[in-house]
Length: 237
Length: 96
Picture 1 (spheres, rainbow over the protein chains, first blue to last red):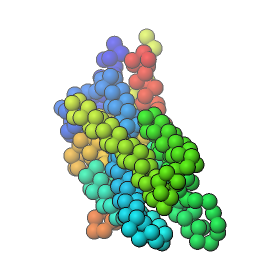
Picture 2: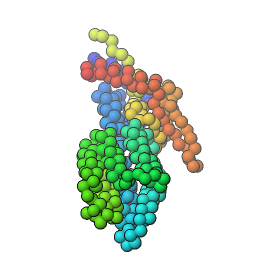
Picture 3: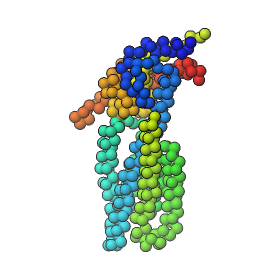
Picture 4: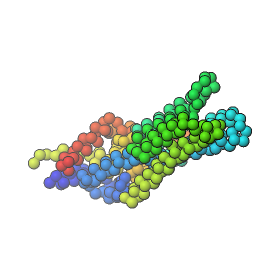
């Protein structure tokens, strides 16, 4: 009886249903009246996809920034090793210059391919990394004007914090754990005589290279893998 | 037997329900994104978006990006309430 009433309600909309092609679940409607189960499936599928939507595009930015930090750390390491001139530390400011164009290119390609959507999860994560970037750059600039403690342990701690928060927001606990272990571990390592073990001037770039792998590249690969698994799951449906 | 509430005919359509469900979870989404998510054709999607906008369920913003027009949609408070009512009626049907 109830099913009949439902269909009767649905029938009043049959004309508009007729002209539809496919839904999120990929099923053709063919003008058939929707069942309550079908309606519920459409809604639940949209909600579930939104929760996991972030993972599809999350890996690439972390890989871009991770590769930028790793590249600059390698350059700093090399130049310091060859010349011993500490002014080569200015190369760290090249990180945003290298990463930003690639990020803009990525954003343009993603928007062209998948369209543009603003969801609260990606907004929150974008803010976390934006403020991490602002704090890091400002702290580095302050070094020109004040005698401040070494930037390396501060950056390691903030990077670990940003990665942990990213993992927390996306409920990717492996990433959070990596952020905590690498962030705090890096800090402990730094204050346990790291600079002496690593020939002092090479300590900072080696530490940053390690952190870029642990806190950006590995999480980026984790998100890419999750994204690929979700994509193949969607295709199977 | 108790009379069951009628389902909102505007939402009782696969594509319109998909559009509004996707928008519920987002702050906003553009036309390309909705097209990719719903798998609908551009023409059909456009028609359904206009119907939802006319009912005040979604807000449509059109802006010029480069040489192209970008259509961005977001759900309104009225749309959220309508979807909530639709879901609660569905629950009655399904005895959930």
